[in-house]
Image (cartoon, rainbow, N blue to C red; front, top):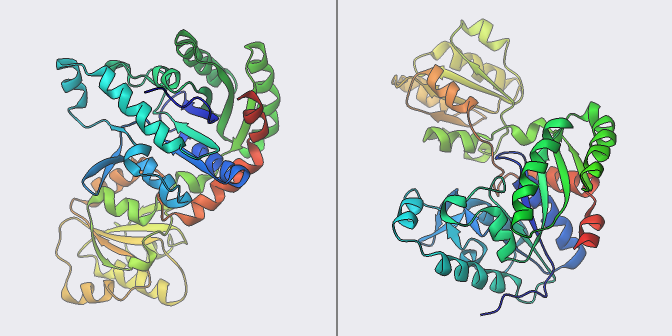
Length: 364
C-alpha cells in the first residue's frame, strides 16, 4: 500500500522531554483547524498511554480528539503504544515491517478527506531508536518536514537543535524551523533577536517564541489525585482547580492559616483537626483553596470527616506521610488534560499570537 503523499503534513519534534511539544501541538492544531476546517492528528509512537475500549491509546491522542473532535478512530491516531515490555519483545523478534505498515495505514486513515495533518513525535530525534523507529525515522516514513520545539534561551537551544537536526538530516528529513518555548516574558524581545540571528547562521528559521506561563506547569487537583491514587472525600466539582503552591500543615493552626491563599494545596495529617477547622473558617469567609490532602494514614475523627465532606473545596485522602505526599506532588510531570479548559484556551491564544503559522505552511 502506497502512503498518501498528497495531504500536507508537519512533524512536531522536540530537543528533549517536557519542552512543550504537546503544548505547541495543541495550539497549532487549533490554529490549523481554524484555517482549514478538516484537520487530522497522529502520534505514531506513544510512550504514555491510557486504556480506551480495551485499546492502548497515547494520552496526547486522547487529548487532541476530545478537544478538537477530529472524527477519526483513536487507534489510528495512536497506532503504536510502547508498553513496558515492548522493547524486549522487539529485540527478541523484530517486526519492523509490520510496525511500518501499521503507521502507514493509520496515517492514511487519519488523512482521509483532511486538508492537513499534524504529526506529533515523542521526545528528541533519537527516541525510539532502540526499536528502529526513532522520531527521525518516523518523520521520513511519513514524508514529513519537521519543526523542532526547544526550551527558551540562546546557546543551549541552538546547540541541542543542531544536534537533533543532524539525525533528521541523516534520515533525509528537512527541519524547517524552530519554536522556542517557556521563554521568560521579560526576555522575550532579547531572546527573539539573538536566537533568530543564531539560528539563521545554521540555516534555520525561528518560527515562534512562546512566553513562559506558570499556570501551564501547575498541576490540577485531579492530577494530584491520580498521582497519589487518593480517595476523593469531597469537591468533585473543583477537581480541576489549579495548584500554584503546596504547603504542609505541620505548624500550629494560626500560623498555617497565614499561608492560606487562592491556589494553595494544603497537605496535613489526618488527625490535625485544628488545621482542618482553620481551613474551614478561611473557606467560610470566602477565601478559596485549590484543595486539601489528608495524609499520614492516620484515621480522621468522625467529626473531621464530616467537616471535610462539607468544605467548599476538594478534599483528598492519601496514603503516606505528609513529606512523601508533598514530594510526589512536587515531582509531578504536568500534562494538559481534556478537562483543563482554562489551560487549553491559554495555549491556543499563546500559539496563535507567538507562532508564525504562515511561515510553517510556506515551508511545507
